[in-house]
Amino acid sequence: MNFDFSDDQKLLKDQAAKFLADKCKPEDVRKILESDAPYDKALWQGLAEMGFLGTTIAEEYGGLGLGYLELCVIAEELGRACAPVPMSSSVYLAAEALQRAGTEEQKQKWLPKVVTGEAIGCFAFAEGVQAPTPRTIKTTLSGSKLSGTKLPVADGDVADFAVVVVKTGSGTAEGDVSLALVDLTAGGVSRETVTTLDPTRSHASITFDGADAELLGAEGEGWAVTQDILNRAAVLVAFEQLGGTQAAMEMARDYSLERYAFGRQIGSYQAIKHKLADMYVKLELARGHCYYGAWALSTNSPELPLAAAGARVAATEAFRFAAQENIQTHGGIGYTWEANTQFYYRRSKLLGLTLGAIGQWKERIVRQLEQRNAA
Image 1 (cartoon, rainbow, N blue to C red):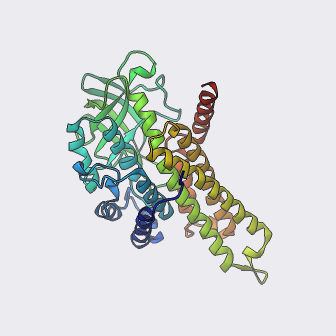
Image 2 (cartoon, helix red, strand yellow):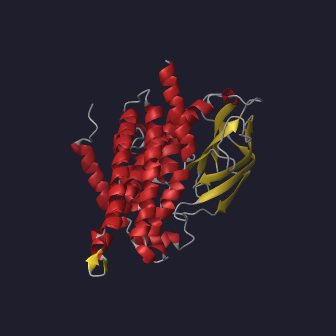
Image 3 (cartoon, one colour):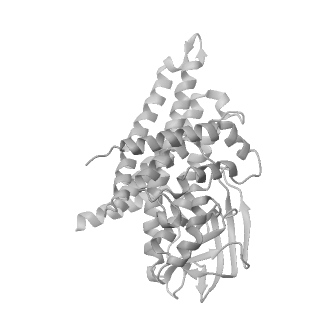
């Protein structure tokens, strides 16, 4: 079993890194942070022109038709750059749902637009602070009319279409849940931007009041498809967290080498050395889990649910720790508005809740291990 990337995939990673180093500098991230712009439109269009938005989308829909490993290496670089773009919403979730459950007509309508950046998609799952379950989902699809409120929806304020998790049955079983596809520019849709800790990734509340919608996939199979999509997205988001962890650790390391206190580099003090060593250990632990998840994702392995949960938990913990310790390493200046350390701290908090809190993913690990032991 080979857990390393191929030479071509490493070349793609280098291309993504060079592109983002040029087009997504810290001052570009700060512009989005300090403005009302929901995302960096120029960067988004640049990613489309590089073909990154269509990495895993089939060639007949305008994509590159590559594999998930290629998307993983791009995701890591997006995380390293703290890129303010709706990549996870549009590509990891909405486009993935279309590819896995959509009809040919639905794919032809939206996937080419996702590839070119002409259309942005989002995945509307949550309905409040609690973890969504078949019992808690209240949004309904009756015939072709959608009613209910989804909150929060990542990039819901800028998306052109949404894949919505809805109730189509009268009960609370998994078979009562389906997926609906909605054009957010049509009538019956109202959106309100909500404030989060990371303003470089916008979120919204979306209310559907009899909005026109159509089933995505078979009725009653929405819960199973959703879990599969979340597992796949978890691996890709974990790679973004991995890139963010690496960047935060390197930022702390560089500062510890240039900052002097009492005539010595602060990096020469044990307290700082221990912080950097702990960051590195958590980073490498997360990297191992991410590579396992990437393998399971790219081979469509039955181990994907367990591998995805492991990657999700390890990467979330590593990113949170590195982002926090990066601020500590910078001392008082690390807490100021002018310091860029806040980019990674904000993003680590946001990604830690994206796709569900870490506690939910730990429970998934337990369930997967119980099922394995019972088999």
